[in-house]
Length: 133
Image (cartoon, rainbow, N blue to C red; front, side):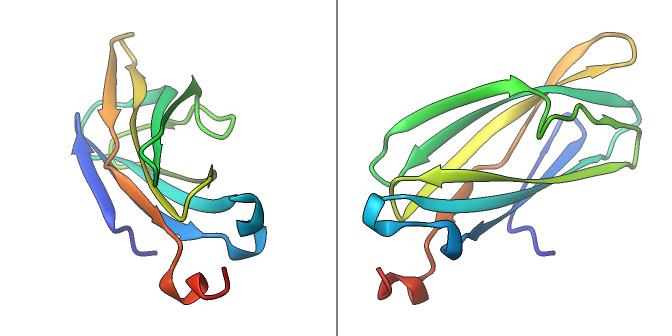
């Protein structure tokens, strides 16, 4: 899979791919569903566990929402050096485009907490669907 959005933070690499979910969107109700896949890789020497996340979601009108909670998709993965964790989730938007960014809160084996920043990743309905709407 190609990951066009990449960041490296505190020796963790975050790679993100986004996709428009045409079959689950309803433009008449201003509901556009996007999926995103995130690959987190521990590029350092210290194992750590992902304990929570915080997202900033901005739609095409500039309205900003904040979402935070424990883990990701109900999991709190523990990543040893060199290990990766990949997951997929979704983001509904009321506009044809938007963007999302945030961070994951981590804790190492000694109880030290730190955060890893995600890249800003963008959502956009592909041009080939615009005429359908």
